[in-house]
Image (cartoon, rainbow, N blue to C red; front, side, top):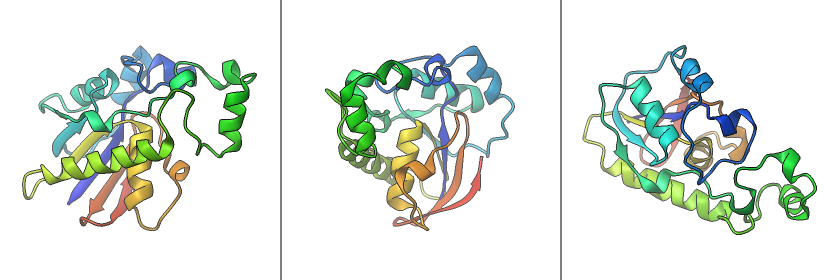
Length: 186
C-alpha cells in the first residue's frame, strides 16, 4: 500500500522554534504561502491529527477530500516546555537534563517519548486497517508523529531524529503491513 506522510504547514510557533504539541495553533500566513509551492502526490484515503494546523493543511492541499480525524496522531505533549523555545528554556535545569538524556526522558508534566511513540504507532496501524482495499493512505500529521512511525517501521532502520522533516514536506512510502520503504521525499 502506498502511504504518504506529510507534516503540517508552518505555524508561528514553528517559526519561533517553540515546542508546540498540545497548543492548537493555526497555520501562519508564511506556512500557508509555502504550502502552495510544494508538489504533493495524489491524495489517498485522507487521515489527519485533530489539531488545527493539520486539518488546515489537509484542506489547503487536498480541498476536494474530507479527512478522517484520528486523535491518537496528535503531537507529543511537551508539558512544562510547551510554547517555549530553547532560548527561554536555557536556564531551566529540567531542560538541560532532558537534553542530556538525548531527548529520551519524559517532559516535565508532559508525555514520555516512549508513550508518545507507542501511541503514534498504534494509531497509525488502526488507521491503516480502516483504509479501503486498493486505496493509498495520505496522513497529514506532525513531525514527531512521522518520526515515530518511521523509526518503528522504516527499513533501513534509522533513529527517531533522523526522520525529521520540514513543515509541509514528507515522505512517499510503501507499507507491506510490517515494514515501510521510503520511495521519495516530498
